[in-house]
Each structure stands twice: as C-alpha cells, then as structure tokens.
Amino acid sequence: MERLDKVLVSQNIGSRKDCAGMIRRGEVQVNGILVKKPETKINPESDQITVGGRSLRFRRFVYLMMNKPAGVLSATRDPRASTVLDLLPEELSVKGMFPAGRLDRDTEGLLILTNDGDFAHRMLSPKKHVFKVYHAELDGPVGEEDIQAFREGVELEDMVCLPAGLELLDGQGIQVRVRICEGKFHQVKRMFQARGRRVVHLKRVRIGDLELDPALPAGGVRELTEEELSLIFR
Image (cartoon, rainbow, N blue to C red; front, side):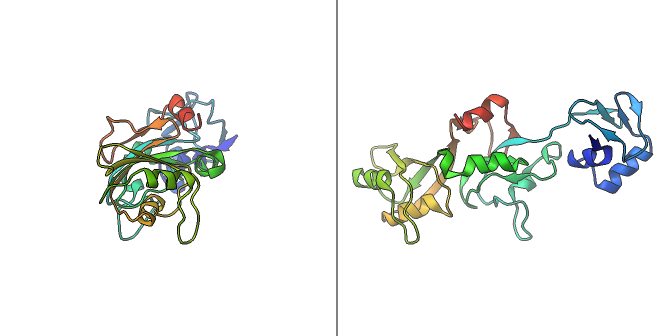
C-alpha cells in the first residue's frame, strides 16, 4: 500500500504540493469514491484512480524506444545542451526516467529509456551478452584483416575489446555493420580509429533482437510492447 499523493507524483501528475492540493480540492477519486486526504493508502496496481475526471493508467516501470537524433545528449539533464529527456512528450515523461546506456552526441538510432534500474543493468552488462548492432560509414575502406581484428578483439590504448563482428555492407568496405556486446566511451569509433579509419556516420539499429522501428522518425519515441522487451534478452 502506498500514499495517494506519492502515487500521483510518481506518475508525473505534479509536484508533491500540487498533488496534495488536487486531492484536498476533491479532484481525485479512488474506485469511484472521493478521497480528500493525501496520506490515504491505496494499491496503485489494482485500485482505479481518476484525476479531474480522467482515468489514471498507473505504470510502475516505463520502457521507451527512441530514435535518437544527432546533436542531442544521452543524459537526464544538461545546462548547455538538449538531452533525450527534453524530447519526451508530457504523457511519457515519468519521474525517474533515464537513458539505458548512451549514444554519443552525434550518433543516431535506437536508444532505450526507462525508470527501471535493474532492467538497465541487465541490458548493459557485458556478462549478459546483449549485443548492440550499428551501421557505420567510414572515411575509407576496410577488409578481411579488419574483420579478423574485430573477431579477435581490437586492442585500444587502455583496453582490449571483447570479440566483435564486422560485416561489409557494400563492395567498397565503407558502409559496414558492427556488432558488439560492450558500450565503452566512443568504443565503435575508437575501434575503427585503431584500424586507421574514421567513422563519418554512426547509427545504432538493434539491441539484442530488438530492431529500431523504421516508422519512428528522428526524435520520435514510443512505448515498447511486452514482446519487444523480450526480444532484447532473447
């Protein structure tokens, strides 16, 4: 059982003070009964809550797919630049949301946002072997030697990367697909840099077996279905 005002705050209805005021003014009902005490204990999982005559859909955890555009930070807040949370519509901007993993500022594509810390930890842990797939455009061609180097684990200045996949998508070896199960700082770019190449454009297209929705425009975001969530760990 949880306090009614805390439940409303968790669903981004307003601040603690705002929600308490709404309750005292008689704007909130629980199971069809008017409730005027903010401290009233309810079961948000089973009780029917209405706020201002509108039914509240309680969500303990929220999982969102975003097609992150370039130029936006994968952060919760930044005083100098826009973040992925700034792109969320009000109905999806639930308290405690954060990006599960990061994409560089100029990297685009699939990003998961959630308020579920355990889920994010499982998805990001290299031990879980949840692979991330990227499409990259390079400033010059790569070939079989580079494919083998990725397969064995590219050596960087401060680490040796876990084995990764490198696939050529065109006849020139400039458009490629990269598959890694880590997500170190600038890792994909640094791996190619170690092979003498620079990444011109980078986009994440898959996490596990979950692919970026091709109908989702840059900056677009939507909730994940239960089936899509399961694809991440399949």
